[in-house]
Length: 105
View 1 (tube, helix red, strand yellow):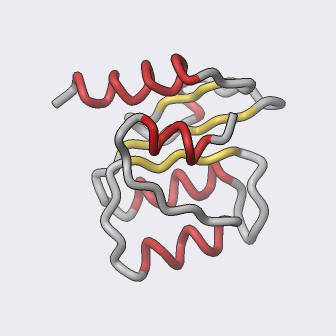
View 2 (cartoon, one colour):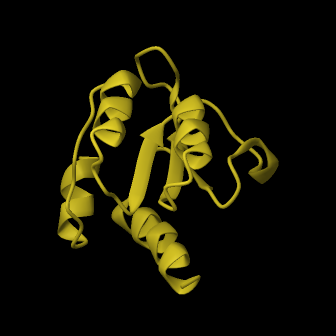
View 3 (cartoon, helix red, strand yellow):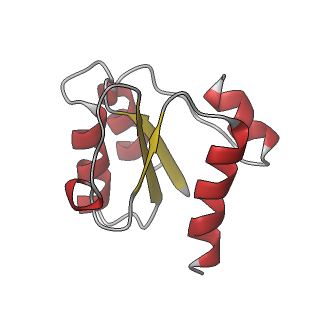
C-alpha cells in the first residue's frame, strides 16, 4: 500500500519525509499538519517512535499514528493520544484510525 496515496485518496494533503530528520525539518519550518503517520523503523537520527514522542512534546496538537510490521506496541508504549497499527495495512485500517481521531472532536 502506498501510504501517501491512500492518505491523499482519503482527502488529506500529504507531505512526505524520507527520514526522521527531514520530518523534524518540516515541523521546524512551521508546516501545520493534522496527522503524523510514521513507521517505527524509520531512518535518521531517531526512529518513528522517538519522532512521535518529539512531535507530541512539541504540543502541536496533531494526531499520531505509529505503524510497524515487526514491533508490537501496547498503548502505554505510545505517546498519549496516539494509535498503533500493524502492517500490512489496508485502506480500511487507516481510514478507521483517522476516523477515531475525528470522532474525538
